[in-house]
Amino acid sequence: MTSNSYEAFRAEVVAWMHEHLRGEFEPLRGCGGLGDPGYDPKLAKRWEQELARGGWVGIGWPREHGGRALPLSQQVVFHEEYVRAGGPGRLGHIGETLLAPTLMAFGTPELQRRFLPGILAGTEYWAQGYSEPNAGSDLANVQTRARLEGDSWVIDGQKTWTSWAYESDWIFVVARCEPGSQRHHGLVMLLVPLRHSGVTIRPIKQITGDSEFNEVFFDGARTEASLHLGATGEGWKVAMALLGFERGVSTLGQQAGFEREMEYLIEVARRNGAARDPVLRQRIAQAAVTLDALRCNALRVLAQDGAEKGDVPVSREAYIAKYVWSNWRRDFGRLAADVLGAAADVTDDDDPAAQKLRQVWLFSRSDTIYAGTNEIQLNLIAERALGMPR
Ligand SMILES: Cc1cc2nc3c(=O)[nH]c(=O)nc-3n(C[C@H](O)[C@H](O)[C@H](O)COP(=O)(O)OP(=O)(O)OC[C@H]3O[C@@H](n4cnc5c(N)ncnc54)[C@H](O)[C@@H]3O)c2cc1C
Image 1 (cartoon, rainbow, N blue to C red):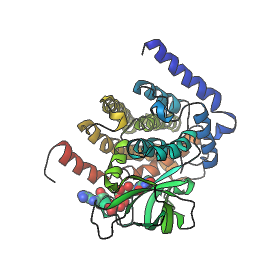
Image 2: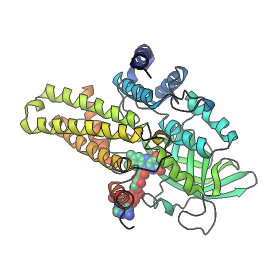
Image 3: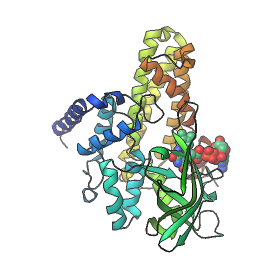
Image 4: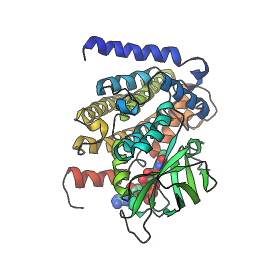
C-alpha cells in the first residue's frame, strides 16, 4: 500500500466518523462501554448498525463472509481513528472478534450463513458462557450439562460473570455433553438463544454501580441439535481456539482507548494542579512511557504472520501482552484516583473527564482478573514461554 492511499484511507475514516458520530449518536461520544455512565445500550446498538451500514464491521473478515479483507495496516488505522474521533466502546465486540472467527474456523457453512450476517449487520449480540461458580481459572471443571433430546439440546447449569448477557440475544456455552466425563474431555460448544423460558439472567451489581456482567441460569433451556461448533465431545478445542482470537487485532481498539484515558488524565491533572506535583507528574510520565511500549508490543504481536487470525503458535511477545497491559491499567487506575484526589470518591459531580477517570479507577480493579488472572498468566509464561515444567 502506498503512503498516499494509506493517508487516503485515514482521511476516509476521519471523515466518516465526523459525519456520523453526531446528532442522535452524540451522547455516545467518548463513552467507554457498558458500565460507563451515559452509555445507552439501545443507542449503542443503533450505532453498531450505523457502523455496519458504513462498512466498518468485520473490516478484517474475508470477503466470502461479507467482510472487507482489509490488511492489518488499515485495521490499525481504523481502530486508532475510531477512538481518536470519540467512537464509543463496541457492543458487538464479542460477536465480531471472538465468535465470528471461531464460526469461520469450526462452523458448518449453514451455521456461518445463519449467524455471521446478524453480527455483520449489528442486529444480533453475543455473550460468552465460559465461567461458572467453580470453573474460572480452572475452566476444565465446567459442570453445566447438555443432553440431546429429539431435535434439541437441553441445557441445565449456571454461568457467571457473563458480560453483557442482559443486552445479548445469544450466548456460546461450554457444556458437558458426556455424562461422567472429566476435565477437558466430553465437552461441547453450544450456541444458545438467551431469550428462552429456560434461561434466567440476573445482573450482578458492581463496584462501579452498574451491572456489566451477570449470572445466567439454564433450567431446561433448549437450542437446536445442529447449533454446536466442532464435534460433540471436542468443545475444549473450540473453546481454546476462541480464546486465541482475544489476542487479535481487537486489542488495538483497547490500546487506543487507553491512550484516550491518558488524555483525560492529563487534562484533569492540568486543571486541578496535580500536574505540578513532582511525584505525580513523574508517575504520569512513566505511565505514558509504558503505554508507548505496550503499543509497540501490540503491533509486533500483530505483525507476526497470521497473528490477526489467531492461527500461529503463540509467541513470547503475545504471552507477555495480557500480563503487562492489565497491570499497567490497574496501576493507571490507582494513578487516576491519586490525580483526582478527594474527587475520586465523589459520585455526583458532572465533570465528564473526572467521571471517566473515576470509572477507570473502579473498573481497572478487574483488569488483572478477566481474560486470565495475573497468576494464570505468570504460570503460562513460566510453562509455555520459558519452558518450565507444569
Ligand atoms: C469484568 C469481568 C468480565 C468478565 N466477563 C466474562 C464473560 O463474559 N464470560 C465468562 O465466561 N467469564 C467472564 N469473566 C470471568 C473471568 O474469566 C474469571 O473471573 C477469571 O477466569 C477468574 O476466575 P474466577 O473468578 O473463578 O477466580 P478463580 O479462578 O477462583 O481464582 C481465584 C484466585 O486464585 C488464583 N488461582 C487460581 N488458580 C490458580 C493456579 N493454578 N495457580 C495460581 N493461582 C491460581 C487466581 O489467580 C485468583 O487470584 C469476567 C470477569 C470479569 C472480572
